[in-house]
Amino acid sequence: MNFLSHYYFERYSSHSERILGALLPDLLKNVDKRYNFHPQRFEETLFAHPKTMWISEGWYRHVEVDRLFHASGFFLDHTHALRRKLDPVVTHLPIRASFLAHVALELLLDHLLIDHTLVNPNRLYEHLEHVQKATIERYIRTIGEVDVERFLIFYQRFVTSRYILGYADINNLSYALFNICRRVWTFESTAEDRDRLTACLQLYREQHLLNYMDIFHEIQDKMV
Image 1: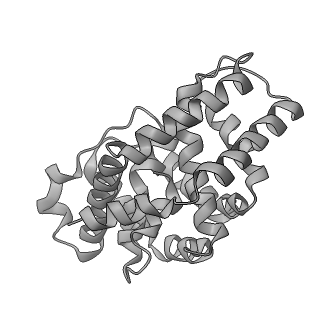
Image 2: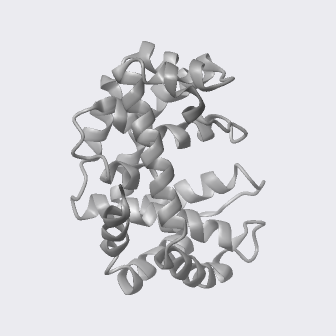
């Protein structure tokens, strides 16, 4: 799941550090996709301080949410159906439609949460701003080899840009999706490409995602 969908499951938490933890695995992957951490190996150190313990709690919940989401019939059915819709949109590009369908489904869920005011993305950013830099640095130094300066620069840019607010407008999703795909493939997209992708996403949302909250309820019911 993407950032806002993870935040949905933590939206009532009073601990900003736990909310950061629910996003941290993906934030680190955005800096370097090779990063692979196992914070449970460092619980003795991390659980000695409440703030780093809360980050770990959020991290563990992130992993469980993703596990449940990717194993769900909702995910399998929608990524298969959406891939078939996207195939003709990207057939002239090196993008793998199955990859695009996976990411597009996650961004559509974030969009729907904002559109139906089920989460407040500004509140998410307030939580992230509230976490002390020293706490973040202590945590990521503990869990493994991290370019701390590079991550903190990225994190500050992520928080100040507030780009997730743009997901309220479905027209912005095509820009985000093509940018994500450029991390994997080299290509240029045109205005026509973006318009066709937007039209595909709009139609899919209207015809197939009316019951999108089912997956959130399913995951919530299965969370410990």
